[in-house]
Length: 337
Ligand code: SAM
Ligand code: DTB
Ligand code: SF4
Image (cartoon, rainbow, N blue to C red; front, side, top):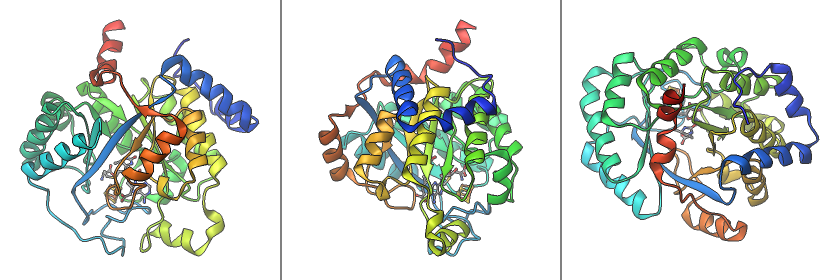
């Protein structure tokens, strides 16, 4: 099977249009060819710097523009972050993702960030960070510290992006992704479904990711968590019909899986308001990672007990492959070229 980066929007639209059972069947076939179908990676999220973000992302509780009640705090100290990582590992997590509500890290923040990456990695956890825009130099520092993945979402189609965020451009996003790729860090990039975008925006979203020169090794698909006081949260609360249809969410997961066969497709935010049946369909359609624990960055998450029960009901188990397997992928591909 060849990995394609030349998908057209028409081809992606045709996938979305397939009868649902056919689409999920095809996605499941691709999934089984490249991944253990009964294994799902367990990840933990930690907000290492919360709130007070100068960006105006319409979905986010941490923007200064939002009246969400989230209080701004400083960057956590290294020791506290490492304690949380140790706890996550004890609870069975395989990957530790850290987020900071920054437009971009300041150079003075980098020494602490580097220590955090090295410390978490030394515990045998896969590391991922999301800190906003990066310069090539900052990306190199993170690569040298051993960071496995950098998360930087494109969120939606290029056309819809500017309706959700005005303080940066889609091109800014792509530039940071390029800096991350050039530094040799695995790319984690996905987006949010259910922001009031159209099917055609979801096509454009998957099209952008699947036609990058190299697919992101990791593709988070979030369902919007509506937060009161944010532009999109308020819009959704006032027009409940705008909520994304579960079937359309599963379709998005399936199309991501078919177009990007090797990537980890991460069923990310929004699980707490999803039925077990919808989540099961997402796993069937190729999602193979979830966030565990009862909190995402600021929003509530499903929680460990309900996830244990879900895994037991579905006969799923935590990913068993060696962690570095995935992290090595970018390097292996480079060598193969
Ligand atoms: N400030 C950094 C940035 O924007 O790149 C990192 C943190 S940001 C919170 C990480 C991602 O979380 C965003 O790109 C967005 O896709 C997702 N996100 C934020 N708020 C969300 C919400 N209410 N519902 C679903 N996803 C959300
Ligand atoms: C991603 O795509 N989803 C995660 C992770 N990357 C950093 C974040 C979800 C945030 C959900 C809203 C909140 O907790 O504030
Ligand atoms: Fe800031 Fe990231 Fe939230 Fe946007 S999504 S407001 S950049 S923390």
